[in-house]
Image 1 (cartoon, rainbow, N blue to C red):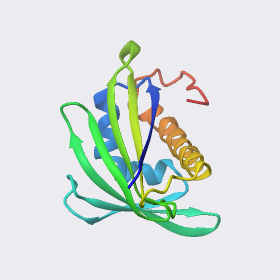
Image 2 (image 1 turned 120 degrees about the horizontal axis):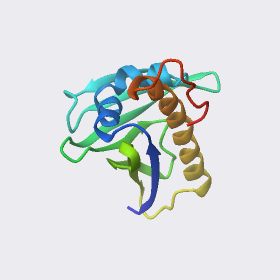
Image 3 (image 1 turned 60 degrees about the vertical axis):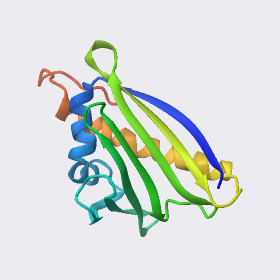
Image 4 (image 1 turned 30 degrees about the horizontal axis):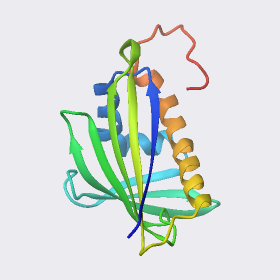
Length: 168
């Protein structure tokens, strides 16, 4: 099995603990509301801890599809969350699983920095196809922008008459 890794970093004005709670503990309810394409998140197996498998059902190109998301580890003390895509349409043919190691840390001005390491674990010695990796990154950005937009009014204290930025 080959392992191919890349890292990405994002920032938010939301405090790490508050963002972690929303993204880890409340995500099953929030994600379908924030991302139009995702229709549901349901627990298929487990109790919400490590080993739990969730099914994310979404619509793409007029078709209803799904991915299976397995929780690998939850580290409340260090605001870490590790999971893998282990089934469904989210896996290219050459890939056995895609693992994500995510951690939130304190950013500037009370905000947070999200650090994510993504590992493509391929079948045999196959290399992931660059086009598929780029498409996966683009889909991740499409999903993360609506979540950031939704969390602005929910998670930060603002003056109700102030204007929130249109892009995050």
